[in-house]
Image (cartoon, rainbow, N blue to C red):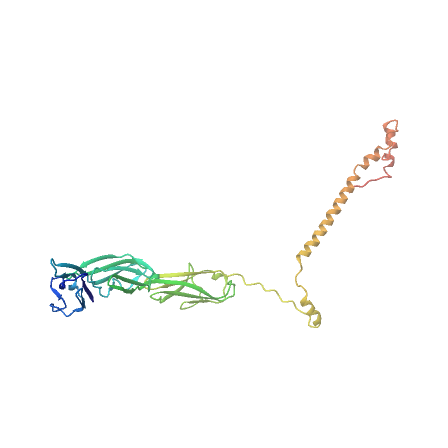
Length: 372
């Protein structure tokens, strides 16, 4: 509904007020409506105002309305009515209903029959996209707007909504939505069910292959890289079971899953360690039960630190003894030459000196010296 009001500041001479439409047809002359259009209704009439309402406004009602005051000379005032036409519900279409990851998809959104032309924005989740927009004006002064967006999809885009948002002064919160459907190759992961920790000889190995994809991978297989799977290995669907492991089973075990998009795999490297060494349990004397219980509380291992300390003390004692003996022999070194020289000072000649000396030939049988 539109309201048109003609107001006069001073109308002392009771001049006539009338309202004309854009085609210069009289809508109201004073309080009389010559125009046969019931959508126009008189709201208020006085010497200073003529107020008229127009219901169910259409595009044909757009234009300039004239308020005339019959004076000499006549006076006029103008008011322009602009009619906004909101677009119809937007239509969003996809070039491909289903698209594989890595490929490009194309979406088109159309807003028809608006005035003025609407603007279109694109959102993919929280990401804003840039589209190519074309505007077409129709015969009835309306506009049709089309926007097209292209982008490559990934597996993360599966199920993500794409919104076509319409911006127009005559309407709010108008949008169309399409959820992406993306096909992607499997994602594979091997889970070790048993054993916990290291795999040792004699253990049983239980592997489970978890594969997800779109479409769901129906084909899951096990193989051993560069070698054959052990003959007694049991493969049940996505599970691999090998009992009584030994080192000949070492290698890379691969789980392969495939669907219509492609295939993927995950590897498990098996390394079999030696079986743990067992220590025999000490036996007890069944007759002397009290001594057996006492021995249970005694330490079962010899302290290597104590042994090292004893060895160090013994070595230190030996070293000290060697030093004392060395100093002793160093003091008595040269005694032979000293005894031989005694008596040489008082002798008349060399022969006499030798005879008088303690170490001479006369005493060789009596004195002997030993060296260690």
